[in-house]
Amino acid sequence: MKRIASLLLALPLAVMVLVAQTASTPEAQRMLEDVRTLASPEYGGRAPGTDGIDRAAAYIEAAFTKAGLQPVNGSMRQSFTTTTSVSLGKNNNVTFSVLVERPGVPLEMTKPTKTAWKLGVDYQPYGFSDSKTVTGDVVFAGYGLSSSHATYDDYKDVDVKGKVVIILRGLPKWAEKDEALKAVSSLRTKMTTARDKGAAAVCFVNQKGDSSDVLARFGIDRIGKNSGIVALQVRRTPCARIFPPKGTSMFVAEESIEKTKKPNSFALVNTSATVSTELTFVESTTSNILAMVPGTDATLKGEYIVVGAHYDHLGMGDENSLHGGHEQALHAGADDNASGTAGLMELARRIAASPLRRSVLFAAFTAEEKGLVGSKYFVDNPPVPLTSIAAMVNMDMIGRLRDDKLNVLGTGTSSMWEGLLKTIVEGTTIKISQSAQGTGSSDHQSFFLKDIPVLFFFTGLHSDYHKPSDTWEKVNYDGQATVVAIVERAVRGIGDANERPPFVKPAGSDQQSASGGFKVTFGIIPDYGDDPQGLRISGAKPGSPAAAAGLADGDIITKFGSTTVKNIYDLTAAMGQAKPGDVVEVTYLRKGKPTTAKVTLVGR
Image 1: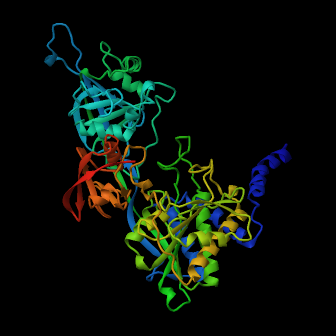
Image 2 (image 1 turned 90 degrees about the horizontal axis):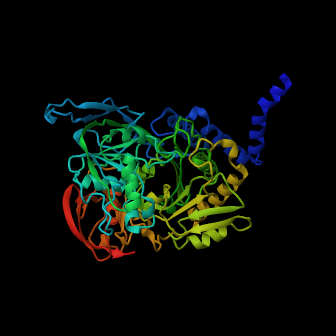
Image 3 (image 1 turned 135 degrees about the vertical axis):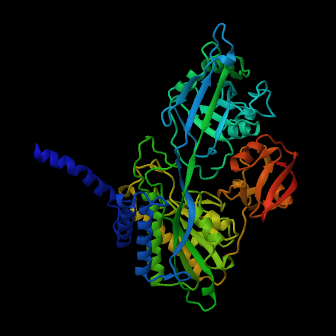
């Protein structure tokens, strides 16, 4: 029995070793060791603001130093402070007061019955809620839907100004194919609608079903933490108990909306609530790790190729986790993006051993998972002039090469790329899948928005993405070595060319312009960094309504028509109500000064 037990204990390790034995070359073996180290429990998932990411930063810095790279401007660390998480403070309370009518007793003489919800059991604030205390009567507003393009309106016959509003999430089944209602059905759009109609607080409750009593994971919303209203998620069972027994129940109201296709909104009789929320946003110092290999050409060494990969991940599971469980679990991030980081260090060793005519600046970016924060900080505080950056080459999730298929994005951002891509795969079995766009959810986008040509190498998503199961033994290290060899060819092709690659903005570059899914296009490029004043933008697409109105990089939109804009969700909520030809007054801040512009929206 002991021998069998020993074999069983040894089996998982044996399987792990067999799966990971795709490292048949010294290069692949080095990257295996780097990925295994960065994805180990000692590094804690590398979340910004933690000891684990600090340990990872030191590991990368040591690798750069050992390879012979030079600091940039005297240091390998570009440090800054950013919001990394949100926590609940002490002042989080929800109390309901109900006056129950008694025969012969005036209502004003009746003592209210008090009911309290338990934090984390009955309810939880959203990570984008305002922090304040509000008191108001309680109103049920159905599904919280209101659209100028639909006859159905949950707010038509009910006043929610100064009230605590209960709203069902989602849509009635009959409305799931109604484009006008679908456009205003997201949680954040419903919240914007309630806020702009004057609600003091909004409580979202799930529709009836298996998940009706499930609270979503608490965390920060990386692109819109400033909602401007107290916002809670509530379990269905305690919420249903708030409805007076002699009135319409939540279940009956929901069934009525489903059957009649008409709103059924109402104030809860003699019911008021006091809601207190306190959220604390945690600010942490984190660092991009930067190191350089100077060019060999006396003239061209003043030009730089930035080769980047983000080294942060989700720690023990943040708001971006796709982990099914609610318990904390290590998110090792082996492919995302220890694989790209290991590739960055391996490429640094090779370029340091055989420099190029142009200089190469290696950048391990932090806080990519928080909204490209590290690369955005880099381009806003460039360690070398942005005009001297010839190109940016990005590696993110390069550890799962399958069927020799390699995704390369940004292929339309320079006229040089078509010829280069043909050259770098000559003599290999690699098949490149191309995308012309320079936008996308990785660090190359920050450079593209500064008119710098980009190439982004990526082996594709998989079922372990943003889950604890993205572990080191699942990486295809020989495949990763093949990808790095391809990337090296690309970097050398750029670095040794006589001419720097000319920048091209590919057609359709407004795909990140907050226009998707609507009848109209505006043409702004969101910054996605949080700003307490409104929605900061990174620019406007040439020829777009936003560009025609004069909006530019750094402007902060505060109002779009009658909608107050605090984040991207408010803007998309307002755009969902617009149609081609509408003239909208947009208010924005430019260098702190309020400015207005008339924008004529055009069709998609």
